[in-house]
Image 1 (cartoon, rainbow, N blue to C red):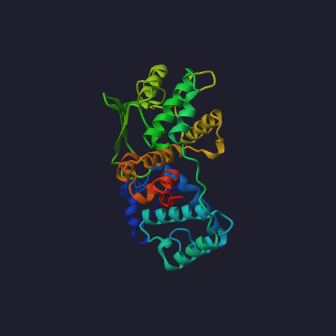
Image 2 (image 1 turned 180 degrees about the vertical axis):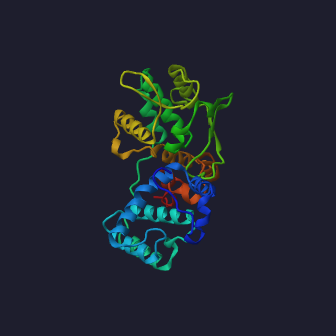
Image 3 (image 1 turned 90 degrees about the vertical axis):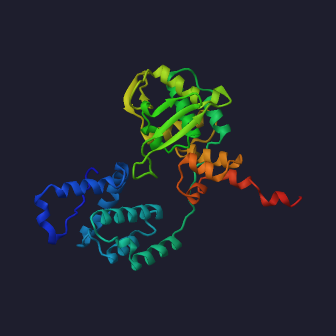
Length: 323
């Protein structure tokens, strides 16, 4: 978990500190969430701790009134989404340490509800990469190694409804080429905190130019990769780096290729691939449970947050008016 450490021992049980049990307890607590999640929480927890220190307040365990005052002090200054993430971080660190979460207290819930009602803003959604957009993005890609990599990244990311973190976490060993297509083992994802893993199947595309299976084979051939990270950085001198691509790099690839295809790059992000899959599949009449299963969504509510244009025109009531 990096810099953040969880104090799991109640002052009345300090005798436990003489054994290695404490460290083992801490390791299990940290394993309850993905490392990336803890890293994201660190800056939030430091901010809260610094705010408490200025006022002589205890950050852990924090009193409900302390958390309510913290939210009130930053309401309208910090984005509501930022404050929401900080509440999650505070809940996580308290529960991991064996304390009740102050976020559950009635006074905190009342203040938080008031903040959301007062400072509500519409969520900014990035444009989904529909099939026609993906096709345009890869249409002009050349036989340069970086272009071949980006073609595989875009097509596999779209067809597999991958989160950026899932896509860059893939190893060559996770991808099996079968007669039906590619079998991809997703070992851990944002929605799979227990690490149970999942499997995604990518069938052959009807158009060779947009086929994710052929794109992967081409990348595997020109990269010469036989093990380790599936998608890696490439230097400006066309040298393949041993370093795995980052989630941020995926977003930059999407934006760069969108711009080359004459789309507005700022409207797209790495998440556009996943949103595009959901929108396109649902709009083409794929049953909701099939979209959820392929995209590894745990609930229809969560999945429906990605369905935009596809849901707008599917079974549209205005089309039945006879106008």
